[in-house]
Image (cartoon, rainbow, N blue to C red):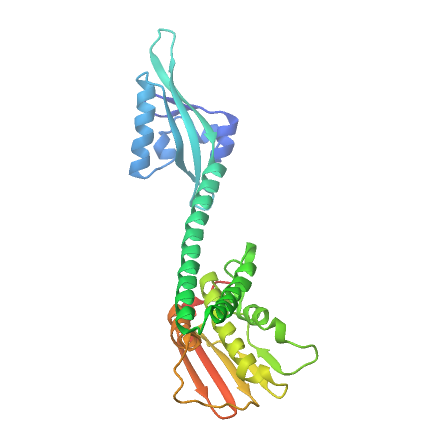
Length: 310
């Protein structure tokens, strides 16, 4: 496009007109910043570049943002690499300036997306490594020997791995409670068996909370296989996660048809800490357990803010 010394349009290529969505009749004679209003900082940058070109100083702006008006009264942003230079008349004086622009909008958007993904990946990997560190220290503190530590630690890490392996592509921020439960209990669900039942709506969790819930389900499953409903064919495991009107939900794990030997003097291990403290803390929720002579119940209240958009 070409501007006169008053920064008013005098000419433009058809490609420029197509890009800004205007005709030459609409732009001819108009002050450039009346046609395309800009915020003060951008306006100052562009006006300085235009005036330097009119003063004989060719210049280039890289990845500069332009606000293009839309038909609905709003704006869309494009990014251009712009080269500005003066145009001289017959007597050699500069009478106009020309802007040659290259549309780099796709490149800028790709770079922003890459940076956002890198920052998010760094944040999530940091969270996972912090959780792994806690699991390692706590498991070691409750292990009887190295073999015992390795067995417990490997099981807990694999619980995280099962969930993380699903959190790719479109599933990164929309793993449902049902999917988490199904993957953790996959080895214990028998065809045509009614030992395990699961009911609940489609509730999607973000990646961090999906990892946290999977850790709780792994601990519950491990305990059930050792002492509860999944140890004997007579045991029944019922899982549900009803959602309230405000978007929050309660995860219910109920085992019945079992025989529980309660040792009141036995200290709570790291598994209990995961269920009672770590998981509810990570989810900003609350947890409770009820252990009877023939049943075990675990309740986890999860506030709405931890659910992911669907």
